[in-house]
Length: 249
Image (cartoon, rainbow, N blue to C red; front, side, top):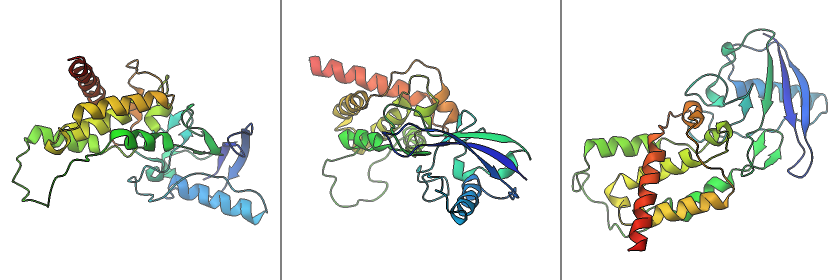
């Protein structure tokens, strides 16, 4: 199959970018999207041209490193799929594709399709952890966790921090990401001690990073490759309200 790619090229965060057009020819339908870009880059390098920069690591939908927008959709049109899991058989021969980086003030473009998502790291560093002394490893059944709580924690922990939620949100909000981390830790016994200080610190850092507010558009959950539910945002808001009440007391 043959494709026409309109790809955003930008030298660095301070340089103005623009779209450039490339031809991807003889593409095998069984390739992943990133493998197709690898082939395009090999041909560019063979012609002595600058290859296209994009981020990736595990290529198994686990690490959350890869991510950009394809035809206006973060990670492309296929639901519950990262770009590295998206295969070329999902596209038609002769199709034109527009590739651009995630757009957000908090995600400055580093080069081409690669953005700086260290703002997510700083949100985690502000409180997305358990720092209390838990002692040596105990028997798994020593602290019973109700099945609904365990399921809720596991569902929230599935977030890989790719940033698609931010790219899809009309306000560039990071509340799905932050809510997932808060809900994960707030649903297990180990996370209870710091539960309310955690939500204050993490939401405060989220605001400092320049992310927008949630207006319940729902696009974040729709494009999330792990299907994180909007419920985590409701849980975060509930914990934040209780934390503020406790502080006033």
